Length: 86
Image 1 (tube, rainbow, N blue to C red):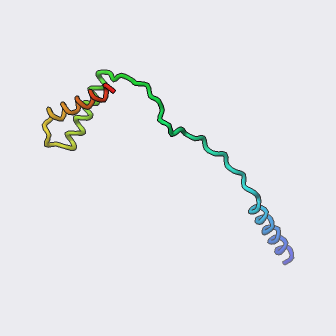
Image 2 (cartoon, helix red, strand yellow):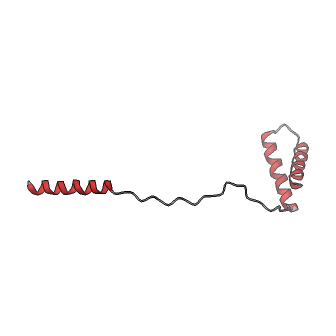
Image 3 (cartoon, rainbow, N blue to C red):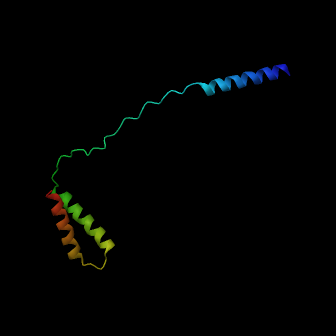
C-alpha cells in the first residue's frame, strides 16, 4: 500500500510540475502584406479577348436566356474592350 501511495504521490508531483512549467511563446507567423500589390499592365492578346467574349456571352445567356445572342455578344465585346483600355 505504501508503494502505491508513493507512486501516486510521484505521479501527482510530476503532473503538477509539468502544469507549472512556463510555456514557450510560439514565434509569430510571417505577416502578409495587406497593401495592394502593384501589378504590371499586360496587354490581352486577341485570343484572350475572344476567350473572354465567349465566356461572357455564355454566362450572360445562361443568366438571361430571353436576350438575343447578338445583343449579348455586343455587350460582352464592349465590356472586354472597355476593360482592356484601362
